[in-house]
Amino acid sequence: MTDLTAHKAAARKAAFARRKEAHSETRSALGVAHLISILTEHKGKPIAGYVPIRTEINPLPAMAAMAAWSTIGVPYIQGEGQALKFAGWRPDSDMVDGPFGAQVPATLEFITPEVVVVPLVAFDRKGGRLGYGGGFYDRTLEALRAARPTLAIGYAYGAQEAEALPLEPTDQPLDAIVTDEGVIWF
Image (cartoon, rainbow, N blue to C red):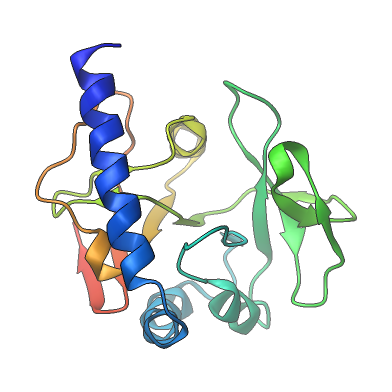
């Protein structure tokens, strides 16, 4: 294990503990209000969100609100080492377990988002993001940004903020972070 790998593992462990402590419906509802305020500026553009797992802050109410104006997608994991695809999602979509157990719509129709709401384990004030370690969002954002401008909005509890994160050159920066406490633009 390299020093960077060990440092990232320690940062993830600390961030998971902070996120677990912060996790609540009340805080999640505060975050949704901030997320909707940002997403409404992008009405009509394809937007990707995610189906929350464990103690992730829940973006589904914001995604449901935006579905009136925009095509919404959720991540579809193609396989290890590959970029994500985004399956079209509606509030009434029938969901099933997809690859790696992530919930996906039963009927897969893929979209290419211009705005991506990104789950995370930790973030810093420079736009750095620490995920679960698979590199899925980094590969995906790199590919999307190579094709056209793509806005990456991290979504988390404010308690997930870290002083500085151990980042690599392949880590894709966030354009903004939305939390239960407000919005930070980078």
